[in-house]
Length: 319
Image 1 (cartoon, rainbow, N blue to C red):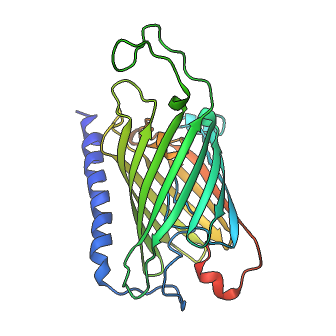
Image 2: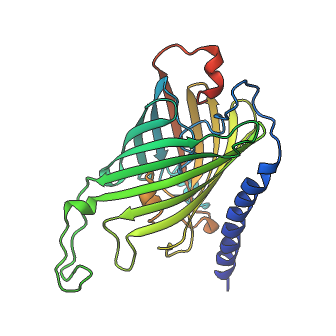
């Protein structure tokens, strides 16, 4: 019976978390907003980075500069004597991703990245479709995001009696088994000067999956950013998937504190996942956070300007 309580609580939590975010997004459209003082009717400053913690945000960097991203997760630790023994997980195997984001105009960007786990290379693109306005004529910001990843590390050994799904053809790896794909619709809304909420329907396709799993995964991520000051924010996100459920029943949960200035964003992160590409985030197991298992990490974003920025552009630039 002891194991039943975390599972029941988790089911209630994920239903309520997504329901509350969806309810706020829908019902709030009838209220007027108090936004950042600006003559620009469009709201661009809901988030400081193109990534909330692990999931995508609706932010695009703007046409005047490119971005360099570092995302890092230390090893998984528990809230016991190993917490200090492994020094917050820094003594354990870590994961890291380096990424570059290049704008194409004000509302589109393309990016490339490389992640340690799987020696994975990925390319991505994001396009703003609709932008929230201060007069509420457009209540949401909506963007489309796509990503393709290629795992370049060695495959795991093939068991002696492994077959394809037909049960007859002996299994053998091919290049397509290295590839996976990710597409999303990003929907966000900023409330006043401090609170931003986002919901992202997610579609993942993996060419190589464990026996018993589907190649396609459908998910939904909910995220919150709350500004506590001009340069600091609290972050939270939860990622649910509708099929291919995790064996341990725990879905990705991440919390963070963000510090930012114009051109910089730094996040201190506590997460239940060590993966940094969303394809494995929606596929692999998470830590058991009800037993105090989690990972420390950080995200860094740095913007490099192509030219000196004009003061009247400040409200549409990423923080």
